[in-house]
Image 1 (tube, rainbow, N blue to C red):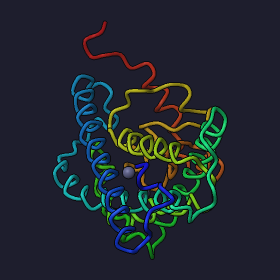
Image 2 (tube, helix red, strand yellow):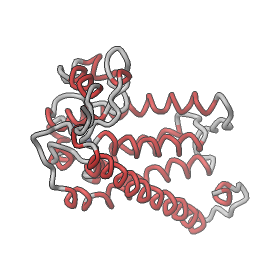
Image 3 (cartoon, rainbow, N blue to C red):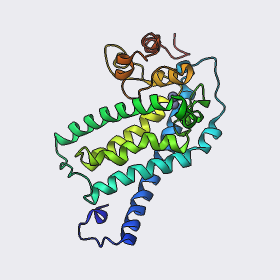
Length: 261
Ligand SMILES: [Zn+2]
Ligand SMILES: [Zn+2]
């Protein structure tokens, strides 16, 4: 990666293309590793804790259909993410801050907040009639599974991930924090679709701003609610929070294993 950042590189188009493809390949490989490892961890956890299933009356047998769409989704994610990172490394964006004890947490927090805002409004847009045809595929799973995260059309993947392509032009975020955010984004996206609420906590409900697995699961089962991702802030402010969200999540805080007395 340091070779890519070397300002002495010969910037011929061919050299640039080779450098970009190297970065793209590394990002894509990392995304595949995250997808498979996180997916398997959740399949293991879900099998051990059937009592944590959110939609108890519904079974999703679409795993392979959902995974069939994953390669296209991962390629778009990798293109957008590598594109933004590459532009920053080449000095085509605003100059990022050096990573230190305060720039790291500050810019990571700002970027996570910005992305949640981006995601909420893009998601609202995708639910509008002219754009819904790009989002309909993702909603075929009424009860999502950990594999549903990448069950999306290519335009939908691009609308969501374009954030990573353009944010280095507006936010001087250290590249290490962008990588960390992307990693978080991939894992939390799969967690949000897991179909089982393993991490219920008061932090996921009012008065706290965080969301949960129940939060996005209810978006799939009730459709017109819960458009955010990491936070419930926009949904609470704009009246799109599912009315029984807080009480459903609280119910899972008291769920005991099936074999517990
Ligand atoms: Zn939706
Ligand atoms: Zn979803």
